[in-house]
Image 1 (cartoon, rainbow, N blue to C red):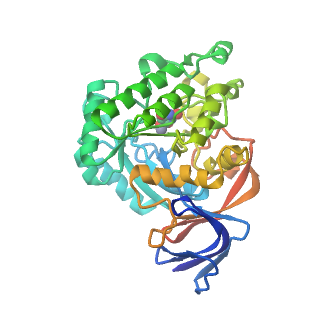
Image 2: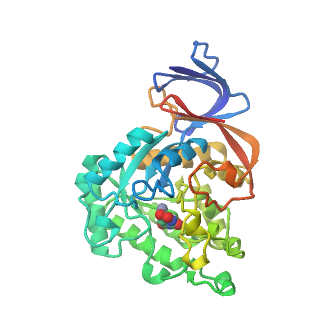
Image 3: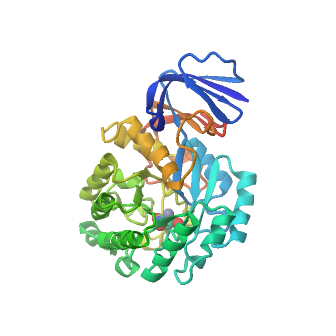
Length: 424
Ligand code: DOR
Ligand code: ZN
């Protein structure tokens, strides 16, 4: 099987390429990136006026399988991923059962082998059952094939346990991903603490519940001489702490999600539960800081935090609705609309944050179009617009915060391991 992609604007920051070129794919691998390739191919794709880039690596995705197949499955989430230009996802471990031991990891690996339409990597838990009481067998998890550990959805409250986890993760050669939230401070909050929480009569979540825990997690990483990755950064102070930590050589990286650089707490004024996620949408100063962090590189990665929930769990009173939004199908278009078209990032900058940096952070031989590497490629019509609505989404759950938005950029092809996984 061979694919020849002709005349696209090839953007591959790892190899400092941004030029009109052809890409030749053979036997699942990138074979050649050059001008005027004339090799014959099984499939020839005309990519004139289109962007050709490495497939997106989304390092924060909730697949919900095993356990909550009513929300999403490996099959439906990876279909949504392919439609969104995503060729690799890191599956968060808050499944039922949680990914806290090799047996459970093997169960999911079996489902992935059968059903996945793109690459799925598994994240194990830091603690057993994500309960924050006892460490998972981190070395055994590594052996079973996980790519990182996280208790995402929860933070490990105990400093001692978190320090021990960082040490063990370092020994095992695993990345630790922190959901940085001090529950004692966020409590029963459901939206950002501020004018709107008072006006709406909803309990608030202060920035400090996030950034104080970010500060702790960074400090522990420094003491353990271990790498740490902060998930879903939403507020200004977190960006500042991470920026300063990077300057002193602490091995900290972080991600934000498209909703944090697009929406503010004002989106909550209609009590729309599709705007409810954890951490919550913050205010305009936070949004500006997130954009600035993306621009100056303090924020390394854009990840969706794709968190599907059923209509029964969302279409209810605000306080009772689940936290989380879907994002696999909109992350690229929202990024083009809000970052490229508003001149926050240029194309190489965006591809670095969506593809190259996640690969580097997770230690993957991906995120670039180097000859010999697996052919994960996305072809994008960046000038095409579309409006987000329910029928447009293939994800099993439809809890998107972007309904009604006109976005720029449509995926024409997603090629995963040299095979067309999605074609518009
Ligand atoms: O909004 C969220 N949803 N935040 C999290 O940390 C967890 C996630 C989920 O699993 O639904
Ligand atoms: Zn999450």
